[in-house]
Length: 351
Image 1: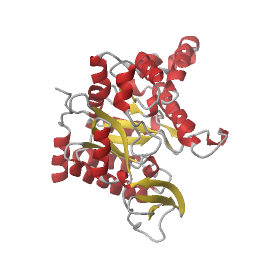
Image 2: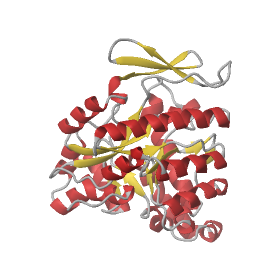
Image 3: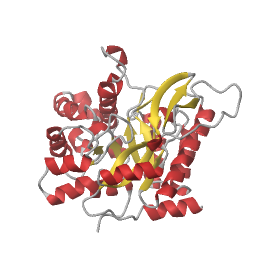
Image 4: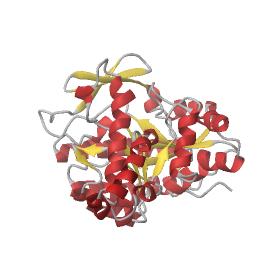
């Protein structure tokens, strides 16, 4: 329980003046344990070292991603945070480690191990980090068990989940028991793209998955949360969508028009789409000031917060500077840099 007490201390940490709170930053363990059974189940990861600072995650013997030790070394992360004016990071697993496509029991073991690595980093960070763990959502009972451990034992702020669970949209009624428990626990839910749809329609090299398919899948996930009436069914649930909500900003006007024009859609939705969307949170990871201003106009000044995708290469390197370039109002800047994320994560707000 010492770890939980230390994590609780981090939840009342105060920022340096003008600094930000990053809700979108990932962890990869420096190594992975052997699976409990032999042979290891399909998709069990391993780590192949390159040098003192880099290693490649391999899955089924094939390279998945080469990462740096910033994924697991607190000192490296904190130095980068200081350089980017980030006071605190919410740490979450690299999405491939969700392991929804693995058998449920081994996946639960792997996710638990990754969560414990995040917990150790939170402890080591002494107030600079807070946890958003993973859960094996292919098995709701196991997922709820791990969610409870995250919140009640490790002291995490909540959980990171995928934009789909083996093709099941997060607005699907089958996932409602999980969201009900997240609401009961007061756990923040951060939705990140994983195994996105539409890969067969992309023409070009593999990085297009991150560039184009991720925001597409996040947009569909957010739309499913609206058409599944998630905000109405769970009014106290705090849920956020990565990559600025992906394509939702373009889909939402069409949803609104469809709500007005199609009786079946109007009957299915318990509230207008825009009203539901403004109950969700979104990170600022859109790489563009006009797009960031559009998110604020669409979703509201209280619903957008910093997200960087640190420490991966396709990240927002200067999120605080982008906010300060995009907006002149100091109160709005403060909301975007700290206050909105603090509310989402259940932290004390900036004094």
